Image (cartoon, rainbow, N blue to C red; front, top):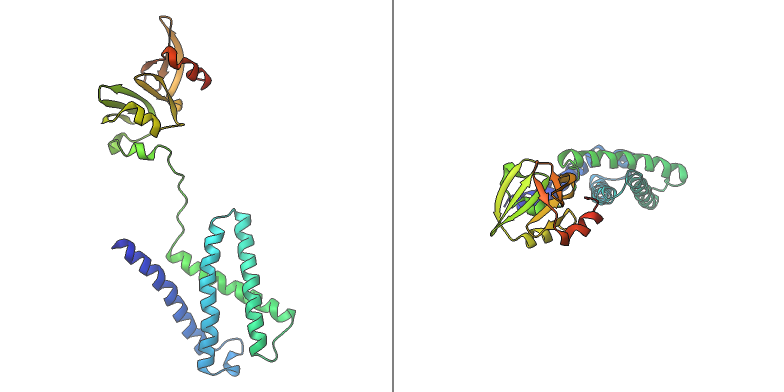
Length: 238
């Protein structure tokens, strides 16, 4: 229901902006439209102008939002030039005295100001949220209690459970180590049949009784078995 109401609001607000601006401008009759047209003609003319501005501003906002700052500026400049050119052609057909580059330049400035005003109103109602980078292990993190969710340190298999250690604590979850490793591909590596470590969770390697051990950030010492030693070396952990 909330999603439906939000979508309805997104449709109603631009329509309301279009209606209010059309009525106000049609009644005011700026830019000599009061003398050139009746109220009905002004309503049709300004309804089309404002409607195109609202619709195309939304489209340009979408395109600009998927580009760099330079790309976004280019999108808006192109938008204003194209929109003003369209209105210039329309005005040339309606107003006998309209025409020439000077009038197009004047119209371009007006279109730019109107477009900016409409865009600011829409942005004020629907502010753009910053893009939050996807968390690589977000799916796995949801398996943990909220209070221990955080950067992973290591995982240890204990019978049918996994002891998951993060920088915020530890938790037992019912899951196979193989499934967890597949879900966390690229974030760490298995160094023992019962142990997985996150690369950023390794403090240092050391030798203990002729065996390789990784000292983790939580203080635990995790053994590196011979079958996984080459992978640990390749990852730069040894």
